[in-house]
Image 1 (cartoon, rainbow, N blue to C red):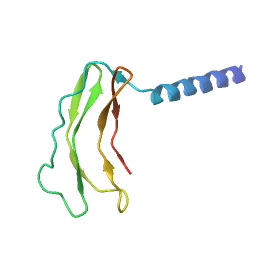
Image 2: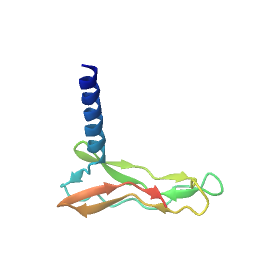
Image 3: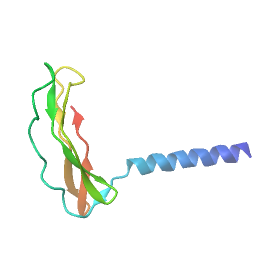
Image 4: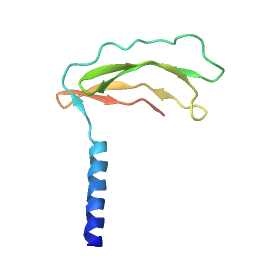
Length: 98
């Protein structure tokens, strides 16, 4: 009984992990153009502006404002959030540090 329960829990965890790695393909055209450019002045030295982005939430695009952030390490480069045309729709690729 304990072994069966443990197997079910492991199988469930694997399914959840696989589902979270899946891409969401949005087939309702790309989002509106991104509003580009910093808003105001940087809060201090070393900050960079990351542009806002549209994210697919439920059944619509939701706008997330850009923000000033500090790089996690020296010489890090921010790669913007973007939508990529793939599988007959659009897939959101989150921004990241390189």
